[in-house]
Image (cartoon, rainbow, N blue to C red; front, side):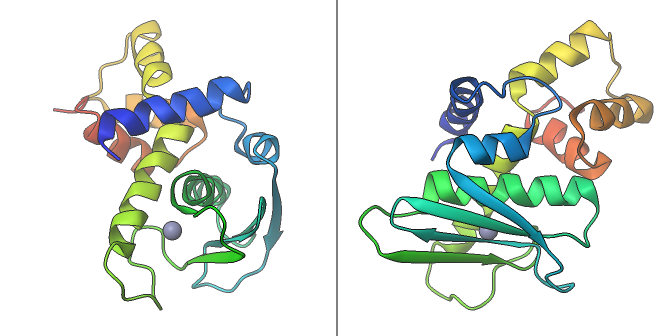
Amino acid sequence: MIREKLEEKAERTLRETDTYRIPIAIEVLAHRLNLAIQSEALGDNVAGMLVVEGDRGAIGYNSTHALVRQRFTIAHEISHYLLHTKKNQKSQLFIDRHMTFRRDGYSSGGVDHEEVEANQFGAALLMPRSLLQQEVKKNDLDLDDEEAITFLAKRFHVSTAAMSNRLSNLGLLR
Ligand SMILES: [Zn+2]
């Protein structure tokens, strides 16, 4: 999906589920999409997973990870659900070891692409472009200033690394 479509779809998803305000209530969003969520001590290597059976789905995420990372994991799994599950398939499973690295176990082409896309869409859900621009404007932020990034990260309840990446991907950083 092209970048602009991803941004639009993320914003539409948030508006339709009445979660379009910061910090994004990512667990509420999951529930409104009829996804059950459960935190578990999954071991260091697994960040999260998504199981889909017919029209029902469940997300598991690692309770031992930092809260901001848990939020990113949930957003990432929601993204797989919205973008990558196929209709009319009995059961589908996504397992994510490290969000920023490749998923193991599947070697078919397109897997990496899906991971990249789930990360992008997840970021767009947690840090909607328009709300981000609004915050920057409202608070008259200078994005060259690291404190501005920290401030935004807190407002959106994400890690500073995630915020910095997002701003850079949106072309808002020099
Ligand atoms: Zn994934």
